[in-house]
Image (cartoon, rainbow, N blue to C red; front, side, top):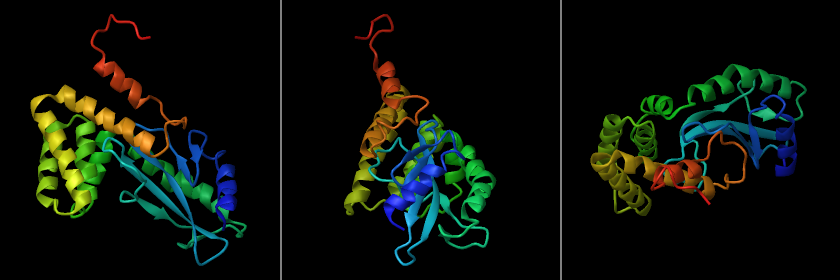
Length: 229
């Protein structure tokens, strides 16, 4: 299935998900407390009319530049198989699966605290998983849990690996801010969240019930009496 064909099918699904927004190969739910949630469609490379559906979520309060699928699941059709656009039952089965599996899962992750609770049940041997857990706890302002997860993450990381070195630097920054100035930690998390939104091209997509950038500006405002220009 070509990307244009897949997007056409996805556009027809908006009626089933009126609160979601269509963006490229994704249907995105409203952001809640910095948690990006959605459904990613992926064409099969071997079967022309077939496609995969991936349900995902992850926190934006760490500066991300791509969507990753560590948290979530691959949605399959009623027979436990890959989806076929030519099957007459595909969209009926998908609608059922949306209400039975997708919406309940995404609704359960509608806050940073709930995401962190779910994330910490995943195997923590992957630094990306532990990173998401730690930063979600921090976004929920559960500082004790965040510090514990950050300490575990820093012990696990290999700073000789470039991408892990970057995670270690940001984790140390956040840990120091939590220890010395939680208000500054809040501002940093919102700054990273706004950065992720730009990196992922979400800044012009109407899927925020709040704007992380606006919230950050309010927190950084030197005086509540000062008028904004």
